[in-house]
Image 1 (cartoon, rainbow, N blue to C red):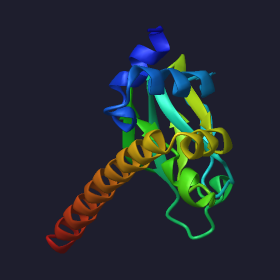
Image 2: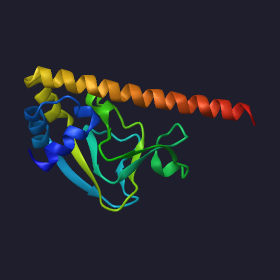
Image 3: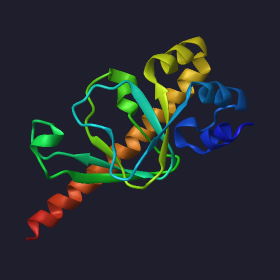
Length: 163
């Protein structure tokens, strides 16, 4: 098994994948590196890629304004920090919509594995068991992220009422 395959085995979205399935995913990956402070994706941009953090970490940021333009509001709010083995960009696999947040590398030498939506969907259609497992894992990952966001909103509402 390659180093990349061993890494993918540890990522939540590839939970219970077979070694052969992991190799197929590894063959689709392209690694990209980012410097500290460099923007990976911008809120409101179109993108058809899923990202998995190989090394370093990224901040997930949103603008409080409705425009979603990075340059119109200097106030970016960090809503999450993701680390090695975590992923982002899952929604792009489902609806091909615009990015709902800006993602910024926080460490020098942050490395990401990038998976193209088109290639990944083709693999899922060719190997339905792999596709089912991937979509199940993505749904579980998104559910966890929604629950965490819900918790933070409730916490902020409660804290805001105590002022």
